[in-house]
Length: 91
Image 1 (cartoon, rainbow, N blue to C red):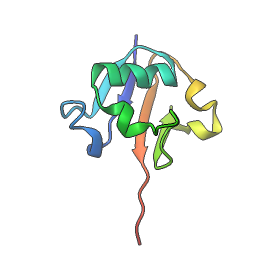
Image 2 (image 1 turned 180 degrees about the vertical axis):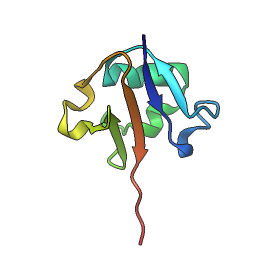
Image 3 (image 1 turned 90 degrees about the vertical axis):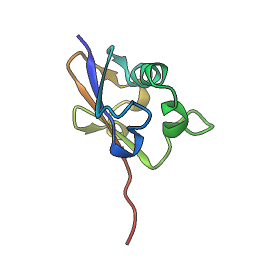
Image 4 (image 1 turned 180 degrees about the horizontal axis):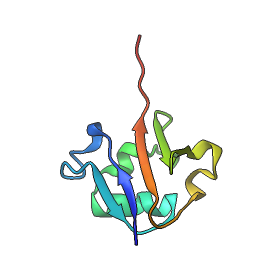
């Protein structure tokens, strides 16, 4: 089986327009690395120079914010959905 990564509209040019991408399960870091390997460009958009997720990028594993789980070490089981959600700001 695999995991499903939901791609936000702002990043779909990197996934060839796909709203969802199926990838092999593993740690969240492994899943996001596989996303970049399959669709180059995600690494630079999601991660800063310090190899940490950019602060305006929110990631959810099975609707749980990874900041309240194990961060990039969070295990993503088969059949789970990972959602990448850019922060929205404005006023």
